[in-house]
Image (tube, rainbow, N blue to C red; front, side, top):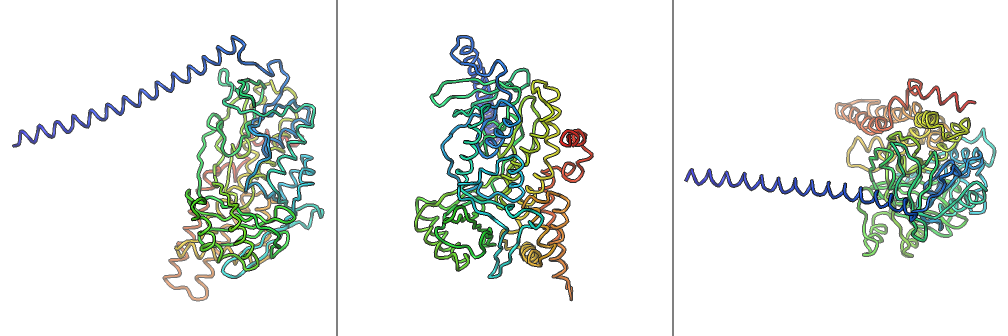
Length: 529
């Protein structure tokens, strides 16, 4: 009996070993097959190059910069570099007007960058609406937060619009410039030689495989970028999705303001996008949303969301649901983690994303473009690879003031604004609403950060913990109890758990101590010239 048990035990181990070896074999076979495919693709490209089946473009120095993608970042960048005399080749997958439910709100700081780039006329003629601040609703109460625009001209404010119309205006402006070539095509991969990016491989609209060469390739192909893995270490998170609706012929309670409803389970946004339309974005936490086709989404919106909508908007919201034009969009978040590559640069959503709750994406992109333009201006010859690499390294450090402020605020606010059964999180949410309702510095400080008018990470950090301390003060005064003291400690701990991981992902040194980064001084000298 004992011998039989030993034999069975031995056979069991042999079986496990056989399975493990089989899996290992499949894994090795997969790796070898992938390598063979990659080599075959490379040989096929080389064969086409040698036989003339693959046409080369821009091999004689006729292009200074290749831009992959003509969204907000790509189109604006093309206009900007072309105005500085650069010869630009833009390759965009689809040149028809985009139809998106995000990228519709440009903060005042972003509008100032648009003016600095000479592109402010791109919001003309598209029914863009001025935005002067936000109204926040929670548990039947509301408070209005106005942008601190007193020091600016009357035209300076935020702008909201149809994303596609705005992009088409910038594409038209780029295409009108003589040194911009705007082409429809799909970039399949980067063209690399000896560790340096020399250009791109792409397919034209009619399916012909082409190459384009330039000393600098800038990838701006958006949140679904298929090229970012070659240039950074992407860590994409999808904390939630937006469900988009359009409300028609309705006036918002506060004209020319975005409206944020702190609902359960997460925030709801309203803002105007034309003379007669209001965009509604319902945040749904997690990566799964109710099915639109089965009617589950409409039911969810009517039974869970509609009762939390301000009564002035209720009928228009239900009518929009009944109309059935419901759209969804996953909300992506990805900290910038560049992998410096000679001859190439990532920008826009391909490089860095944050939760769109605060509408800061376009502001960060336009700020990056202004910075890149200023860094490249002294460098007339982009073929000077060493100098170009040094300037691009400066870019990653100098952009942190704006990008880290808006990224951190977006991530922190989203987590604070989401409903939670945790008493400490509830206290933090209530404290945030009441802190913003105090007015004065307590509202002007946070809204100046959100608007992109005051991109200072330290100010953000101080206001965030001022909210936490304000919440603690409400708990322990006038009569602290052991329960309230414990809740206060958990509130501070929860606040730390929200903001510190975001700061870590952005880079503590780059956010708060940029002067300790060698590239900072070099970049500041170039920009100030």
